[in-house]
Amino acid sequence: MNEEIKALIDAADKAIKEERFDDLIEFYTDDAVLVVRPGLEVKGKDAIKGAFIKIAAYFKNSIEPTQGKMLMIEAGDTVLVLSQTLLDADNKESSAYSMDRRATYVYRNIDGKWLCAIDNSYGTTLLD
Picture 1 (spheres, rainbow, N blue to C red):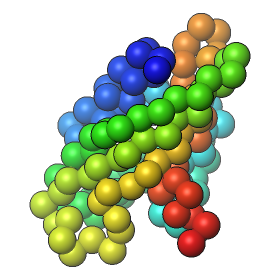
Picture 2 (picture 1 turned 135 degrees about the vertical axis):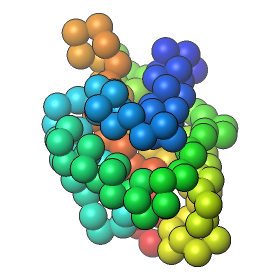
Picture 3 (picture 1 turned 90 degrees about the horizontal axis):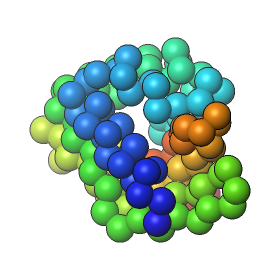
């Protein structure tokens, strides 16, 4: 497992929990894509920041993401991360979205720095 990417994911989860959205977008490539929910994707740092602000509001500013089991497949400057993503929030019982997900993330090494290019916390459930 690429420990550097694991640490970056943990740091991004902490930034989400603490609602440090300016810090959060620094984990992404300029052209990154975030799957907000099935059927809705946003592209670029500004759109991703705006989406996370709305996600935080949806979860009543109490969302806390963590990662469970992870598997990484690395090919040169690209890493596919498969991860059990767990979400906790004050209103998780009433959420229309799964709080236990099998996420897929794609990281690229750009100028020696790993950045998230695709953030899909829904993983293959998008096929359902």
